[in-house]
Length: 455
Image (tube, rainbow, N blue to C red; front, side, top):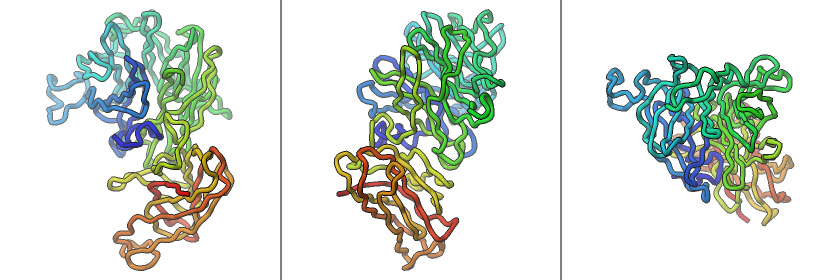
């Protein structure tokens, strides 16, 4: 496990791209059920991993390994006896889980719009005996299943554009057609902006639907990229549901941010929203993120959360070495990539900004910031705290050939360089932004890897 786990966003190791996270509580542990991005040009993979942590230590995440797979490495996918999913060896998309009578039921969907369930004896699997979800004797189709247990009944939601709902029968794989509703939240004109990723929760006596939303104020239903998680509420599980607002919006985490997916969970006395963010200037490479949220349980009103760098923590500690990868916003094409064993912010050009939220500077208002990484082009680095400039320094590099250059023939090994910036008048709690500038427009300036502070 990476030593940053749980203390920063993303809260899982950076090598783990786990989007679509559904958080659940079982036996005093928090479990995350998500898909897994592992390709450069498509979503998800052929297997799921389950992660968990004790409620008393949300920095101690365990990867329980492969819990379920649609394709077994080294086996013939055309041999039915070797196929964990008898009807498809396609990519596994977003899952959810439910517990009933000591059994755990993993609900999954695939790239062919099929939906199924497998079962296991533990919350982390392995899950076996895959069966299709059916209604009226026919398999259902759609994506993004969600299950809510309510007074001993299990309710199933799924769909894209329109969120469907029906009650699960005792076999946990058959839907009761008498309870089926075609659309409880929708992207139709004048509706709630539903895109996908339904996650049904209950707060007190109120049902709360969390979902990836296209809703915009200018066009209140369809029109926006589904980068935010919205919520709609109802006094009845079968609705009607009314949209109340945004929980979190991942816009700005990557230049190619497209969708979001996640849900909410109360852990001990604190509510959290679990979601994801893209990387690599692609819609893929999505990593698990989390924010603290304020929930008025009486009115079921959720205050919109800010994206932060802190994960389950309340602030970044300047005494730590901070990975640059835990930013919450980039501009002007900058994005996160892995180079060798390091995660760096690449494509930093003139005018690019990188932001981290929040640092705790309450112990000292004056520090020197060191930004370490690979420097390619000279320029200027300015630091802003809560939007106010607090320091600036030139960016310089000594190349192996003896001068500044972006010429490949020269920098056969540029090496790790750094910029030191004295900071003054730091606020106690700061949203820190680095702005990069150069007289060489279009050229990459630097690939930041870490931030550190000294007195």
